[in-house]
Length: 453
Ligand SMILES: Cc1cc2nc3c(=O)[nH]c(=O)nc-3n(C[C@H](O)[C@H](O)[C@H](O)COP(=O)(O)OP(=O)(O)OC[C@H]3O[C@@H](n4cnc5c(N)ncnc54)[C@H](O)[C@@H]3O)c2cc1C
Image (cartoon, rainbow, N blue to C red; front, side, top):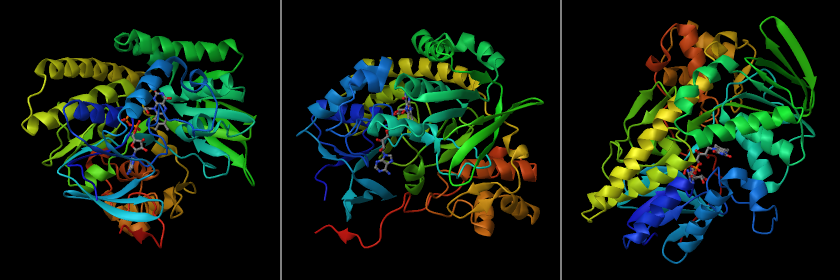
């Protein structure tokens, strides 16, 4: 049982700043996170006995990472912190958790969902081979475990993380063979005016790219990774630019096209969702103060729309202030206005990022029939197209017909790609085919768990 009325799910930048704000106003929230030591994705901490220095782990973001870690450590004793605890189900005023094989129910009166994001995956033939990782997973291997995913690694896809992770690998001494960016250079040039709204962030992006080129690492833009080959594990990739095709031998591939929000808990809680053209995804509705459409449920950070770590910190604080205000506490209104202003500026920058790294709209049309889309249920592009040919176009109906998104990941990996294929095959707009409904457990849980005494 939790003794806290307020529960926060997620100890990333959003969740930690929310907890800190609540404590500053005399509350004792419960902070739950499935990871070992908090910090979220960007400021993920390595296990306590690992010794890579902070500068090597976080680069330009070292001081922000250290500040967030210090904030979390400083809350010890003031919050009910539950690391290594998965929230696998959410219902009105209660969460179902699993920690070290023990299942429990955590009641709440008010809830902040700050569950962050994962990679957006657009499969490529061969993507299920051992040695192929998402960009985020490749970064976790390095950041958390000090490991690289191969001795000769190719990075592909698009988005800011592409250049950052390639840079981090090369800087750590790994052999980076190439960076294959699906976004053409012209897109990034076009995005410059919007990106200049956050000159420091833009400068970091330019630095990573220039550093790679200066160190002899080929960066190809406007190219398409179209095949990953190998028998027991990845042995190479094929990519093309227009008519020109190229091959590279490698033993590791990391790929993704941006990020997707982890919105399943909001879904299980009954939050209303809206189509977001910017994120090309369905997102839980939140007002400009962090309130969801469900009473007493608040949303902060990337879990309700990708805006990055700085925005997540601001949103965490703003959402906590909103919650406190809604509970009748007197809050600093000037601070609320300040936070909203800063978030607005970041949102405009975010439009620039989407222009710089556009979604590859032709992906679905080119996806080969035989390619696996849902690896949990082994559903191919052709299986999905067959369901559409039989007259089904609503995504949950397609799932019922061919089992796409029905496996252990519950569509977290394949759902967006499946939706793209349904839209393309049916000729309908992506926004009109619906979204996969969340189902508990949202992540795999083990059999034979004990109930908390
Ligand atoms: C793998 C990955 C790596 C990234 N690396 C970088 C980077 O190096 N630089 C950069 O600028 N941006 C990076 N990003 C983007 C950046 O992480 C986010 O913009 C930022 O961390 C958002 O903060 P947040 O607090 O909203 O969410 P997050 O930092 O994602 O934190 C969410 C937390 O919620 C927890 N959680 C989620 N679901 C549950 C659940 N059901 N039960 C319990 N706990 C749960 C997670 O364990 C996580 O700690 C990365 C994103 C990903 C997915």
